[in-house]
Structure formats: C-alpha cells, structure tokens
Amino acid sequence: MGNFVECYEFGVYGCFATIIATRFFTAEGGSEAEALVRAYASFGPAFFFRPVGAALFGRLGDRIGRRPVPIPVIAR
Image (cartoon, rainbow, N blue to C red; front, side, top):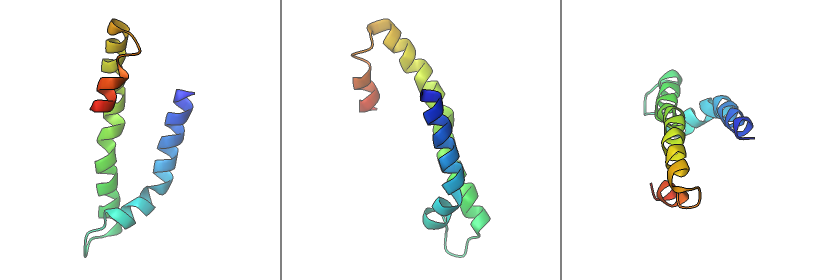
C-alpha cells in the first residue's frame, strides 16, 4: 500500500508540476521553463530525503519500539 501511495504521489506531482510552477514559482519576467525548473528543484530534495529518513527512523523504531518513534518524527 505504501508503494502505491508513493507512486501515486509522484504521478500527481508530475502531472500538476506545470500548474504549480506557473502559480507559485514564476518570477516577474521569468519564463515558464525557469519556473518549472524552480518547482522541481524545490520539491526534488524531499523525494530524495524521504527514503533516507525512513531508513534512519526505521532503525530507531527497531531499536526502541514502534510507539515512541512517531513523537520525534512529528516534532521534526
């Protein structure tokens, strides 16, 4: 189920990236291509750090148990 949600999220963002870019990342006098690059550049690190965070907090969950782990995850 988690893989499906993640693939769905990537697909939805890919489809709506042009809309997001023109509404939120277009500078005055800037081109649409520049706005699209800015949109991908701002959301790209999140797609990279998601598995890194899962690996770190997964190991933490295995060490101290599954119930105490969401507190530091939500706090960060």
